[in-house]
Amino acid sequence: MALLRFLLFSFLCTLFAYQCHGACAEVDSDTEAVAGKGFKLGCISCKRRSEVRGEASVEWYFRPKGEADFFLMYTYNEDGPTIESDQFEARVDWNGSKRSRDIQDASIYLLNVTFNDSGTYRCFFNRILSYENYEYNDVVSKVVHLSVVGKATRGTASIVSEVMMYVSIIGLQLWLLIEMIYCYRKIAAAGEEALREAANAEYLAIASESKDNCAGVQVGE
Image (cartoon, rainbow, N blue to C red; front, top):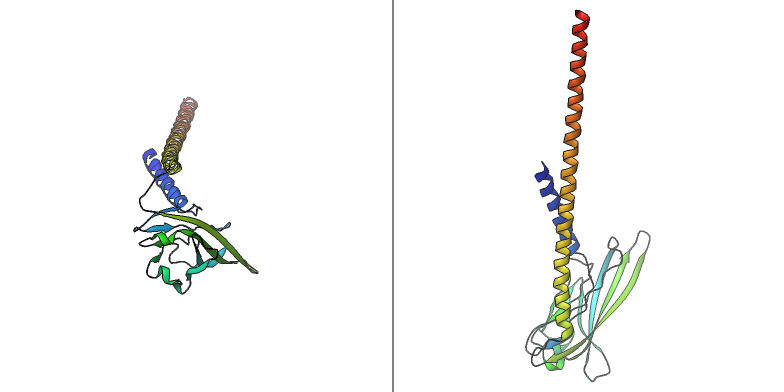
């Protein structure tokens, strides 16, 4: 019985961890691409209240390095994606939220990156939040400063970030394991206590019944 409870608790913990993993988290985009390869331009904007229904459309703008003005390069809405600039024709794929009009991840993927793709990218979320009695229009923007290099380099900050990420993952797994062991012991102790109480109650019942039988025999004599 205790093993069954432990397995059930493990399943619930795994399910809870899976759901938490799927939660929205705003992560900054990488900023260094390698010429001739693909690159993901990250753009995430999480709603403050996940229970509020929302719809969003996305616009991406680009300002080449050394230029003063932005121009529209890509849009995504209920009609799907549209590449708005000849410079990026057939080189941009949608890499954000799928099968939902409530877009929180507006990331795109650049194919065959060139040095001319260096510059500043800005994505805009045009979001409509639907409350019980009204709708609220919200505009959120994110900026990515992209540098294109001929060969991949890896800075100290990137290495430290990756190490910290793995340390955090291992720490969370150890914490979850400790919680599972603690809960298992607590459940097992509670089960043993219940068995002891049941045994004591049964013993008292038997003792009381024996006493009554003895008293009946004496009265009969």
